[in-house]
Amino acid sequence: MDKMTTEVFVEGLHVYAYHGVMEQERVVGAWFTVSLTVAYDFCTAIDSDDLSHTISYADLCQVVTDEMAVPSRLLEHVAGRIVRALRCRWPQIEHVDLRISKDNPPMSASLAGAGVHVRA
Image (cartoon, rainbow, N blue to C red; front, side, top):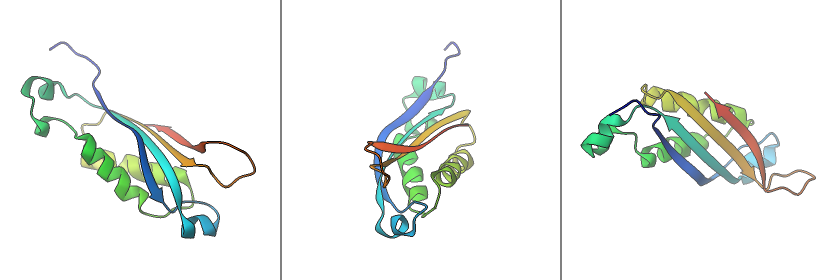
């Protein structure tokens, strides 16, 4: 097959976690929304129709959920851990695009969410 860009994505994964600068945020917790795209060559999976030749989005969700379970003050720290964990488990990943948003963050503004976006 001709060279193409191939990506797997997870969009809008909702996770309850304990991240925040304020101590109460790390005690009470909040909902977060995570979206993730990983680029890698899955042309073998295109031809084989075999799960072992790709990165399962269920496995991506598990890595994200595991890292989100570790409380942190900064979402930047969480994002860095997620990217490192993904690249460690799947060295064939060429590019990661990760967004983490705290839903309804505790601030004096009315907004759906705020967070970080990492392209690595």
